[in-house]
Image (tube, rainbow, N blue to C red):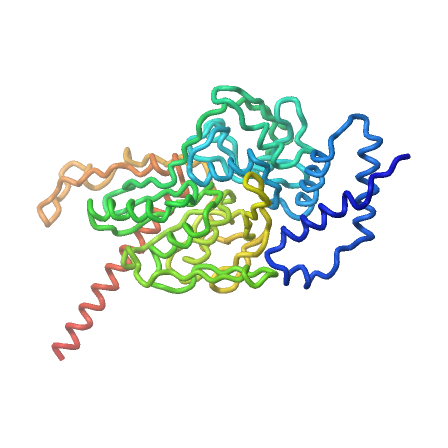
Length: 438
C-alpha cells in the first residue's frame, strides 16, 4: 500500500502549530512537537487518503482535520472559513441574512442559545434550549457547527424545514422557516408607566454602549426617571467592550469583569467609569436561560456591586472568552483563550448568573375584581371628608401581567423600591428637622 510522505505532512503541521501560538516563548514553553502522535495522525491521514470510497483532495482533508481538532475542545472554538469569517463580521455589525438564531454545539447537535428579536426563528416560536435535530432531511448529528450554520443560511425568501427537540416534550416537531435579512435593533426603549422606563438590549454590538446612552438620555429628557427595567432576556451576548460600556452607565466606578487564561495577555481587567448616568435610580435587570456571555457580564457586575436587582431565571452560563486569530486574510480560528469572572470572583462558565428573585415565565390571568361592591357603591354612603368622592379609575395592569409576567413583576418591584426610597427621604428629613429644633 502506498504511504504518504511524512516530510510532506509534518512540515505544514509544524508551521501551522507555530503560527497559531501568540509568541515564540509560548512554543518553547510547550516543548517540542509530539512526533509519535503526529506519525499516528499521518498514518490515519494516509489511510483515509488512499482507501476512502471517494477521492478527497489534500486541502479538503486537512481542513476537516482542523475542524475536528477544534470541535473536540469546546462548543465555541471553531475554524472560520472565508464565508464563516465574513459572517462573524456581519453579525457584529448588526445585519445579515438567515434565520436569526444564536447557536452552539452540544453532544453533536445544534442547541439554540437564543432567537434574535423579530427574526423568522423568533416569530416561529423557537426557544432557548431547543435542539435542532435535522436541517431539511439532513441529520445534524455529525455536522460541524460551521456546516450547520452554512445550511441554515441561504438566499432571502428561501425556505428550510427544521426538526426540533424541546426539553419536556416527548416528540420532536417540525417548523418551516423563510430566510430573511436579519436587522438586529440592538437597543430600544419605552415607558412602562409614567416615571418607569424600559430598555431592551437584544444583542451587544460594537455601538451598543452608545445606543443605551442615547436611550437613557431620551427617556430622562421626557420626564424624571423613578425606576428602570433593563431587559437582557434571550440576549446571546456579543462584543465584550460594549458590555463593559453598558454596565459602566449604571455604576459609580469599580470593576466590571476580569478574565484569566493560560497566556499572560489573556489576563485582563475592565473598570467602570466613575459616574452613574442614572444617579442611582432603582434598577431591575431581567435575565433568563437565553442570556449569555456579555449579558451575564452586565448582570454579574451589577449584582456583585449591589447596584441592581437581578430577576428572572438562571442565565445560560457561557463564561468563556473567544479570541479570533487570523490565519490568512480570509480565514481564522476562533479559539477559547480565557474565562470570565465577576468582580467577586465568581466564574460564569457552566454556572450562569442566579437571579436575586426567581420568576419563571408563565401565562397568568388576572382576576377582574372591578365588579365587586365597595362602600362607595352603597346607597346613602358618607362622602369622603376630603370632599373628593369621585374615585379615580386606574388603568388595570392585567394587560402587562398576561403578556409578560416577568416584566410585570419587575415593574411592581420598582414601584415598591421607589415608595420605600421616598419614605426613607421623608424620615431622614423629619429627623434632621427634629434635631435642629432641639
